[in-house]
Amino acid sequence: MTKDHTSQSTIAQELFDSYPQHKLSEIQSRRFTQADMFRWIKPLHEKRAFEMTPLGQSAEGRPLSLLKLGNGATKVLMWSQMHGDEPTATMALLDMLNFFANAPAHSVTKTIRENLTLLIIPMLNPDGAERFQRRTAQRVDMNRDAIALETPEARILKETRNKFNPQFGFNLHDQDPRYTVGATKEVSTIALLAPAFNEERSDNNARLPAKKVAAMFASVMNQFIPGHVSKYDDTFEPRAFGDNIQRWGTSTVLVESGGRGNDRDKMFIRKLNYVGLLMSLCAIATREYEAVDVNAYEQLPFNTKNLYDLILRDARIKASEHALSVKADIGINIDEQADAANGNVTLVGKVMDIGDLSTYGAFEEINLAGVSVNENLVRIDAILSLQDIHALSKKK
Ligand SMILES: [Zn+2]
Image (cartoon, rainbow, N blue to C red):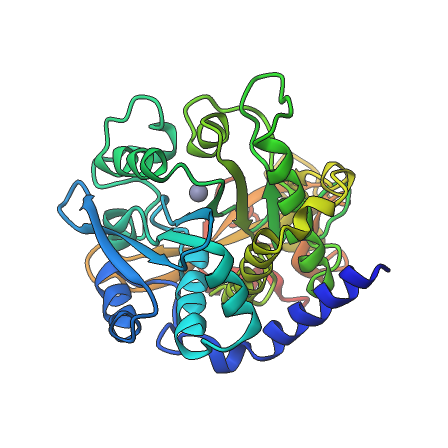
C-alpha cells in the first residue's frame, strides 16, 4: 500500500464516520419533489454556501438551476436525476452542499473550493421526480435526447456543458438494484463507467482521465463495500448524454447507485455516493487522480444479472392434472408500486423464473425442502401480494 493510498483511505474513513453530522437530515425518504429540494437548500444558499443561477425551465415549467461554488481553475459539472426515479445521487449532492456550508474549514471543503469551480445541476428532471418516473413530463427518456435535443431538459444540459466547457463531468444515476458483480452472485451496490465516445470504445485525452477518476472512486468504494463494485455496460449509445459529453471533450464519469439487501430506501448508498463524490473531487483538485493505474479501471468486473429478491429453493410444483410434480426453485422480485390516486406505495411481487436457479443469488433465500406450493400462484409473471409470498414461503 502506498503512502497516497493510506492517506486517501484515512480521509475517506473520516468522511464516512462524520457523515451523520454533515448529512442533510431533512431527507428521510428517497421520494421527494423539487419543491422539497429547494426548501431544504434555501438556508444553505442564504449562508452563501453556493451561488444559484437559473438555467431555464422543465417541460412543465419547473425552474432548473445551476449551483456554483469555488473559484478554482478546474471546472467540474455534476448533474443528477435526469431519470426522475433515480434520486440517490441528488440526496448525496444535497448532503455535500450541507457539508460545504457547515464545515467551511474542513480540509476537504478547502481543497475543493480553492482548486475547483464546482457546477451542480441537481434533479435535472423535476417533472419526472414529481411522478417518481424515469421519463420527463413529455414521456421522453432525456438520456436518449442528447442529439435530437427535443426536450428542454436536454437542451439545458447541453447548453450548460457548452457554456462552461468543464474538464470533468459526473453523470449520476440509479441502476437496477439487482445487477450483480461479474461472475459472482453479489449485488452491485455501485457501478462506475467512463462512457465510450465511439463504437470502438477508444481512449483519448477525455476518456483516460475519466477512467482514472472512476478507478479511484471504485477503490474508495471497495474500502466500504468490498466485492460490491462493478463496471457498467460500456456499449456506445450514440443518443446518451454520458457518451456525448465524453465525445464533446469533458472527461465524464458515470456513477450508478445499485442495490443492497436491506437498504430499499438507499440511505446507505446515498452515504457511499457522498464519500465517493467528495473523494473524487479532492483527487481532481489535487490532481492525484493522474497517478492512478488505468488497469484498475479495466479490471473492474462488468455488471451481470444473477440475482432475484427472493428465491424459494426446492419447492414442489404440480402444475397441471396430467403433469407430474416437479422440484424447482422459484425466483421472485419485489417492487414498489405507487397508487395512482393517493401515491401510497405498496410492495408487489412477481414470479420471474421457475426451475434450476442454482446460478442465481437472492437477497433472501428460503429452502422449502420439497414442500408442495400452491401451483396457482407459481406461474411466470404472476403478480403476488406480500400475503401470497408469505403463504408460498411457509415450510409447513
Ligand atoms: Zn438513469
